[in-house]
Amino acid sequence: MYSYKELKEKDKNNADRLVFIDFMLRFTGSIKRADITELFNLSDAAASKMLAAYNELRPNNMAYNHSLRVNTIEQNYKPLIKWRADIAMGMLANGFNKNKISDTDTAILPYERINTLPHQMNINHVERITRAINCGYAIQCKYYSKNSNNHSNRTIVPLNILHDGEHWIFRAYDRSEKDTSRNKFKFFNFARMLEVNEDVCIEERNRKPYEDLAYDPDWNIDIPLSLIIHEDRKEKRERDAIRIDFGIEDGSDELLILKKPAYLWILKNKWHIDTRPLQDVNNDHCSQTNKKYYRFRVDNLSMVNKLLEQHKCFSTFN
Image (cartoon, rainbow, N blue to C red):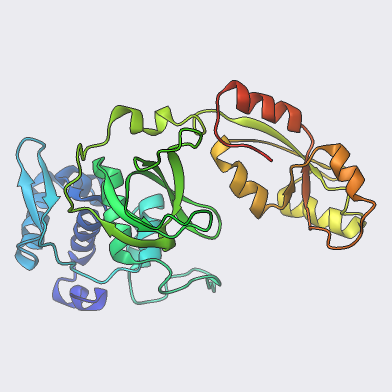
């Protein structure tokens, strides 16, 4: 396995293109000649030469699928360079960026990322999940869930990746969920994957039509949320700080946004949203001990609950 610097010394002009081929194979499972021509503005012939050059360095990494006209990853794949999981995830979300893999500091202004943890995500787990997303198939995994004691094998169909401001997560269809009162479409945290296996024999491995996000009742509508700065935030400076942090106009206490039902639980916890009825909030004012901190209160709670019920959503805002 090369470092980026070593690969640059070996082939200065083509290192970035070779790294891109390796990135696509490892994290999406395939690479097309068109991927190379579009990103690097090369001719078809030049892109073919790049694929041939990569094949010389890693002869067992890919095979050409004539029916799909695409190069696909081989089971004996060996990475060309070392990847950091967070860098790979950022590129999958925002596009390939050669500056992210160089050993030199390319920031225009002094920059540091405070919450980076070097071993938060297992790179082998990440690549198997993202390949499954791109290629549309199921995987088996063991997952640590705070809300469940079920850490046994699950069969899931990963569908997309998200970042909640702190963690990389993904949405997946859980074939192992047998409780009909719960949504089979769920969020999973990349860092909490205990095992991920894509090479096991899974019945009907390919993603089924009803396992697509188009069939997720919590995904395909936007719910209007009227969030009011909480009554407990009495000091002017505290309320002004919330307005500034969330882009609320001066003199207003309301943040009006549209969000998918799937996001409600995440927003409730990250934004400290009080989802109790106003009567319960008012009654709580009598107690000043062990009060939970809230930044916002849902002002249109009744409407939200009616819309969730109307669209047969599994998510709740309670």
